[in-house]
Length: 240
Image (cartoon, one colour):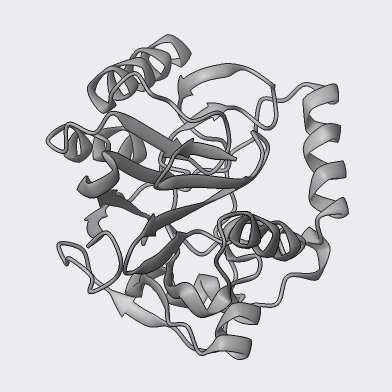
């Protein structure tokens, strides 16, 4: 899916990953589910590109519905996989903390589970090698992505700001479609380790001034990062 000529999404509003396309090559942000591999190949082909044009993959955190095809890409091409040091063990299949009871509706929840199964979410291949990031770096990858710490959903959650495409990729720092309830619009994401911290962390994104806010779950938000963060904060207050 083309968002702009330099910004593409694979997957859908249930689970998504993104491609930053530049003359220097492609940077991938998140790896969705294992079955999104074929979507990646199809999107690259449609752009007249191939795996040889991919320079790196950045994970916003280490959960299975973001790790997806990352290890396959690393093994088959040698492309480095970047993840925050605090989420490296999680991206390698380590145990994640138990979350509080989640609010859910049967239809959306079953839809999420069915899509996850169909796209290989039950056969995640966890990473065996990663390149750790710490937050504050600008990586030597197409688009010069900047790493912004975004703890809360997980200890090592990050956002990735790419000024060249006027976009900030937030993983599960927020959602624009709750996979458990079907509710749309910017809001706190489910399955979050530290919900209050996750909302507070979003303040760090406002300074980017990005037009596009791109979550791991939900539609791309083109209304600007400040409006997205304000909407999440309002939604969090309403839940208290």
